[in-house]
Length: 451
Image (tube, rainbow, N blue to C red; front, top):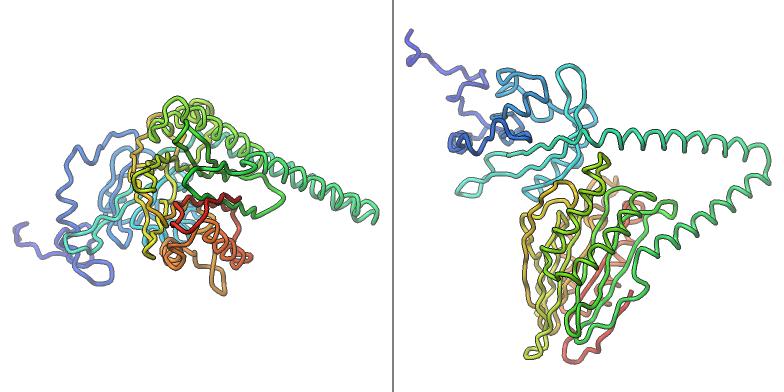
């Protein structure tokens, strides 16, 4: 039989004439989209890995770089394996419980840490970014994924493991001492109380004591500490640039403990210094990226953060204020309007700060009119676990709906409502959360700043 007369094999995933798709729908449009890819788009020998999958996870394209990391052949992967088949057991669990739900909810996700499983049994730590490609009618067609090699983090992880083992040994010794005498137990509890007090003082030193009075603006902030036993890396600040303009930022450093606190301190002072030199948000984030990358990542000890940095320019003619901001991998800011509406302020293109030597940031601009408020927050809020079994994330859309119900209210009222929301999460809130609200008061509202 001539090859052109061969009937398609419905069970061969490599047969391009197979028109079955996930859920039974036709993937013709998906294959058409794949055929549009050029050699330049795929970057076979790029320094990072690229792959495209169908919506059910089946690998449709993969570049030579990623195949080399995995020790696999293209024939063994394309059409035969799913993306999760390339992950370790732990990576699969994290993908199903965290990565995949966020990707379905947002349509894109970036800078997520996973582990790939090599054909020889080895593991490769990576940072993964994925985006869903949609067709002309809005239906999801493909998932395109970029994979960055993060093996340089291994030394850092081993250091953490040694520290964890040392801490576990110390904990066992403390438990044995408490069993020996009630007096020793009380002493240990007293020591722990003093340690928590010390950590609380150190944590407060990473935040401003009070927010400055900003002419023509109301400000309010709140910091929720998930555990009194750990130093964490959420931060915020508001400070003057000159006689009329102010700058602000809010962010989240990866990790916990003294190392995260050190990065937090460096980040705050770097942003302040960079803003006084050049208040442009993109310039400030670019400077911070260079500092963190040169200080940590280039030395084999990756430390990075997400952050939003912005400036406030008052408009005497309208009584409002113009906001210019840029984001480095941080959740988008929320704008609450005086008319009772609320929307996210997109900041596309922002990468995690400190991961790559060169990072691209983009400025977003909005105007706050009287009665409008800008809300910044860290992902402890949107990633709070909800529901009876604590398996669902609060999420962006729930936050948007909550904010819309409080649109038009002053910042301190909004922060008070969010404080109650955080308290209502109970044990589902297991990450620190920082909140910062900046609003132009309505004509009948006084200027007020709270923390």
